[in-house]
Image 1 (cartoon, rainbow over the protein chains, first blue to last red):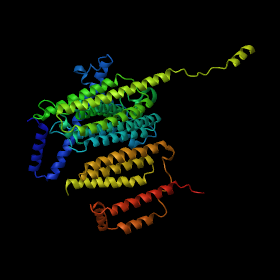
Image 2 (image 1 turned 30 degrees about the horizontal axis):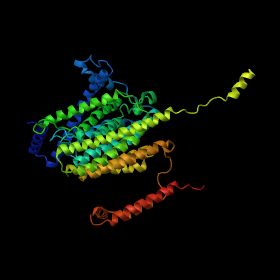
Image 3 (image 1 turned 180 degrees about the vertical axis):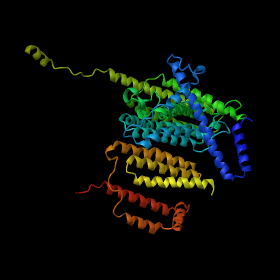
Image 4 (image 1 turned 30 degrees about the vertical axis):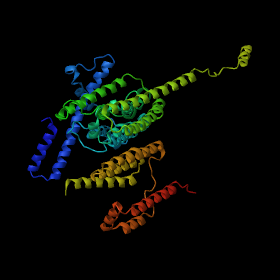
Length: 403
Length: 149
């Protein structure tokens, strides 16, 4: 009773088989229907996200946000979409027409692909891929491609610069992200997301808090959101890779970005916050969907909180942060977790959690100490008296004499 | 014909069509994008063979790393974006003749395909990969050779 999705699928498959269709065709029809239903559901949530984003940013900036159309401005996104649809569609001169038009589709489609492997409930998930974590990394690589295509095809130097920046950022932040992703994989002994969710007793945020933080930071960088939004830094390159897009094509980029943020939140919830886990989720699977979305929206709110609280980083600071700080930290964390997990194999759950937590805390303390030493060194270096170029005094006197 | 066979045929046509476009496209970026389509087609093939790990690794390595690197290199050298030179060598008919002689007909192709994936024969795939890499090495040297005029 608690699982309407599978009930409908079973009824439909029975009905189609009764009509006399071959079994393989029934499977394909059900697969296609599943894709359509999942994609539509996610896109409808995406429409809601526009409203959530505008409302939350308004609150952070001490405003009210959209409040004219419908209750609490809920119809605002529909008005936004109508506005985007009736705008003039501009293709710049010299643009590579086909690539220019495929790029926004790529940007949104790639995000939809990620939802295929997220388990919504114990019995509801798109595809139970046993290498789901690797799949997430692979789809992230495709996302980079959409940005490159948009930047190159626009025939605009700002768009190209934005694309270059995005690629540099994504390629650098992918390294610590993949290493951080390995920690839950290691703990659950599987790359399948459903197995990882089932193994979270308790949630991995308690067992691997540092990995969770690294994953969150690198995900925000992959999203290209503030403070990592140099790829669309308005004061430098106007709007980055989507500078030339108008109307619904821009809308697709925008929708893709918002949905990507929610997708990353859902992934974070799945990997570190127990996914669909919650009271009675195993008996009533549909509750799992609710739990997953509550957790995902909480993380989405955290991402927005970060976005509207921090100023933009410079590109050298950003790449340095990834290569000199996050990557070594993630590597150290992975090694320590791997050894510790093997050493304490077979102990009771409280001991297991406390020892992992202690290891994480010790690494965090060590990191803070290292950072403090570095900051002290930097302060000394900056405070040192440096030679300043001064006009030689003799010449100065000569000048006066001449006058 | 089952539905899976239809999917396989469509994928095969897209993959091969993409591969042809890689070598015929005049624009380097277009060629790189067609190459990505081809590699993606191969990934879909792996998926159809129930090999999810290969599928994902194909996408991560070939599309995520190698193709992105290629596109990056191409974009940094805008000058050679459009190639107007001849697309075939004068001796193009010889390679067609050779290919027909070696792989002509369906039976030898079937035998070759089976020999490539057979679990107890590693010599043929190894030798083929070696020849292919050697040819690519020589080709790279020939292309990069400064012609004395």
